[in-house]
Each structure stands twice: as C-alpha cells, then as structure tokens.
Picture (cartoon, rainbow, N blue to C red):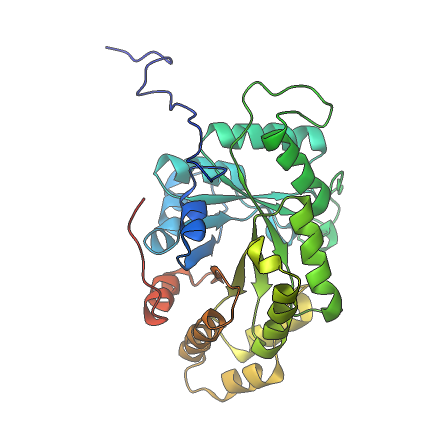
Length: 325
C-alpha cells in the first residue's frame, strides 16, 4: 500500500517546544540543564552522495550534542549547510545550520530558514561570512544584504513575532535556537565583550568562538563577560582544535582571519617528536583549562580533516556524555 503525504509516518508534526525552551533541540536542552555541552564542526564533502555526508558525520555523532555544518567557510564551495542538515536531521542527529550573509539576500535567507525549520533543524548559527576574495572563486559576486547582527534580529523576529521583514505574517513561525560567533583573542581585545553584548541584544542565545589557544587572554575576556553579566544571558562554547604541525599552525595564524596562536604553542609543536599527537594533547589540555573558567557552558571542537580524533579528545578530556536524545 502506498503512503499518502498526510500519513503520520510521512509527515512529522511540528510540535511546540518544551516549557522554558525555544526548541526541542538536544543542544538547547543540554545547555539549559547545566551539563557541559559539546558541539563539533564537520568538514563538508565535495560530493552529491549522501553516503559521504554520513561517513563524515560518523566520528562526531557519538560525542557531539550538535554537529556544525559549515556554509561555504572561507568562501570555498562545498555541499550546502542546509542540505547536510536535512540529511543528518533525518538520521536523528542534532545539527547547527550555519547561515552566511555573503551569498544570499534577505529573501533567500528567510525562505531557507523556514525550509530548514520544516526539515527539523533547530539550531542556527548566524554569520556575516568571509569575503569572496578569501576563497577559490574570487570573481564571485558578494551579497552581504544582511550581516550577523541584522540576521539575528531577522530570525528572532520570524520566531518571536511571526513575521517576515516585510511585515507579512508567517502562518507557523519556526522554533529555532539562535547562535553567533565571536573572536575573544583578536584585537581590539577590550571591544570584544561589547561586541558580544550587541549580539546578545540582537538575539544570540549561544556563542561559538573561534579557536582559543591563549588561555590568559580568553580568561580576561571571560572576566569582563562576567562583570557585564553576559554569562547569565548567553551560553558560551569556546572553540578548540588539534593542530597538525607547527607549519600548519603558522599558516593558520598568518592566513586565517581571527586566529591567534601564541609562539609558545607553535614552539611546543615544533619541538615535538610526534606533532600530531602533541596537537591532540594541547587540545585536551586547553579543554581542561577552559572548563575551569567560570561562565563557560561547553566547548566547540573544530578538527579540520581530523574528525576521527574528536571522540578521543572528548573522552580523554573527561567530558561525560549523556545519552539522552
């Protein structure tokens, strides 16, 4: 017997979120419960085969409360974030849909947000996006109709007020947990907490930072965040990742915007007999130090092309996992 589109097994009911929550997202539940959350970034495939997405997600699925699917990061084209989110959500995995303002105008973005919510996506990370000159197709036309701030306000208005930017009513508003990015270790350092406050005002509920390799600088940032009371208004997940070599670390510091890696870390990598293993050890040590900083709600692990290490890093850092879906 053929299924009809109205059958319960075909259509998933769009239910209201639990009391005190904006969504039924596992990530939101973990954060609001006070448990230490783990998100992890997945390297997107250059492929149209769903099997390649599932293969890439497999090392992260066991330990991540949500998997970030990047949206043409570095202005380089890969499978779309919304496509990967749709595939992994159907498998029951938590995802973070990344939206970059670089490539789409407000009409396309609002439509994509509704489509993502309809497919079960509950977490959205709002990004301005790297300029097209950073990528491998510098002749592409940049859009930047919105930036991260106006994108946060737009999606918050869609969710809370049930309207598009035009003022037109949305029949069923999306249930979404809104996130933004921050760079705590990049000058001007004194301005970073102020920037974070503006993103919270715009609608950010969770923050994933760029790579943290300088604990004293990050600790100073968090001290100011606590002084301003921001840690009570947003969930902060510092970004960490295992370096592959001293050469890779130097390249990242020189070529990737927003990355600060102290000389001491690079020197340690350069002197290590096994740089890959040393990079993993440094990442674990960073997580252990970050967990001791008040106001931190979790960690965001970015292991570019080394996703197989994420489970080991989480386990060896002593992060207990709750298997509650």
